[in-house]
Image 1 (cartoon, rainbow, N blue to C red):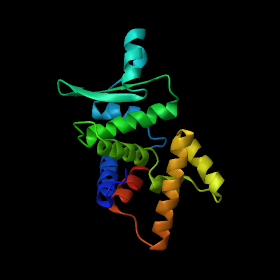
Image 2: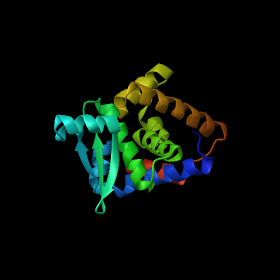
Image 3: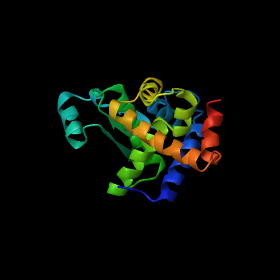
Image 4: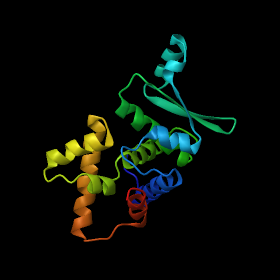
Amino acid sequence: MKLPDWRYEQIKLEVARIFVKCNITQIPITGFEIANKLGIIVIPYSAFNEGKRLKLIEEDEDGFYVKREGKNYIYYNDNKSYGRINFTILHEIGHIVLDHTQHSELAEAEANFFAKYSIAPPVLVDKFGNETSYLGLLISIYDNFEVTETAGYNCFQYYLHWKRNFDKINREYKDYEKMILGQFS
């Protein structure tokens, strides 16, 4: 599902604010660090007995969040790769900070974009990916941001789109991009 441009801009600003609030200053960006600094309790499926673990996997193969007694909890499948786990946790943080109260296609699209943007913002790919070839840049995204193959490719495609538009109109960084760069200088 494609979001309106203004909503993408709002989510990018929210990611930048989270980076500042949580003092995120290094790549790879980790959902565990952000969750910890936001007071979100993160629990692996393996913390439960086998029967409960199977029910959790049935409910959601990757992970989900719940709010109980004023606290946010993220449950995640720790049998996945680190890159998948990190994306899942960032996705669930997206639901929390974007204040999603019910499951919908729109909420999923917003949380997916939140995770994609926060795991490898194009402005950081540009800063840390000083490769001259597309293959070199793609490999540097995998290495620097510790993402899955799918997430890395999606981040690479998003970066190329961002870079084309950035260069085409010869624009300056947006405020949220300056905020992010300021965290990583």
